[in-house]
Amino acid sequence: MQIEQIQYTVDVHHLGSFTKAAEKNNITVSAISISIKRLEKELNCQLFIRSNKRVSLSKDGHKVIPYLESILKEIHLLEKAVQRHQLSGKEIISIATTPGITDSILDYFNDTIDEPIHWQIIEGSAEESIKRVNSKQAQVGFLLSNDPVKDPTLNWEHIGQEAIVFITSKCAPEMDCDDIEGWMSKFPLALYNEPGIDKFLSETFSYDYASTILLRTNNINALIRMLRTENALTIATPAIVHSFSPEVLDELTVHTLPAELSGFSSLWKVTHKTVSLSPGLDEFIKYVIKQWQQANTVSFYSETSN
Image (tube, rainbow, N blue to C red):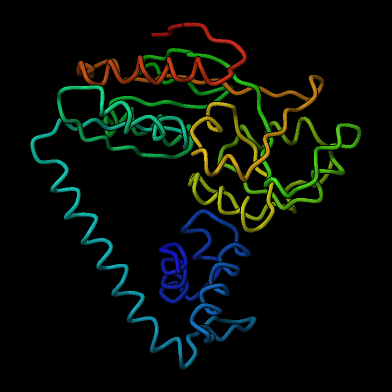
């Protein structure tokens, strides 16, 4: 049983719709349905009565839902209690980022500094990260975007560029370089919720990839689960792959595209012009950039736009 399954089930109950629950969680209806069916299988009971007009709780569902709601409430209280404990005496640094960029090196970085720091990592799309830096909810943003709208109130530094790669489970067939579209069409897609991904796919491939999308999310763990359990294909960059644990990498295959189909994604550092960076954050930014430079990237350079 996973927290996401519980959350999706409670959302369907409260919203009365698989579609509305999918919209709330920014995933597809089929992903919501699959997740709840798995929970029903684990509990050995049917939670919802499904019809064309409405979704309602079954007899068992009426008994189970209060327990699921209680679990979510306890998790929320636990998270708040842990956060209060962690914040005690620590500098707070908020970072808005594309998933996978920073979280893999935070633990190591914390071990190398003298002052305790509480990292608040807010993952989301490039557009969401820009808004958070602009509103000062985050002190710095790390974005993967080829064509960001450069807000003049922000400082923009182009850190580098990476080649896009495809990722599948190890048990998936090898990429057929003579018929990549045919090979891709064998997989459901699990994608970052990022416009640049759709732009790359629509400009590079002619098949109806949209009809094969099983999940859109900015949750990197959800993408990994789809690769493992649904034999899905996802699109990422070498630095994001570099953030995966060795255990996860052992189960995956990273496919490099032929040169004629290669796409690229750019990494940007964004800060607000009126916000001063603390020494701890400044050191962390340098460390992130260094890690990116070591992650088999295509090219790196510094190009600052103020």
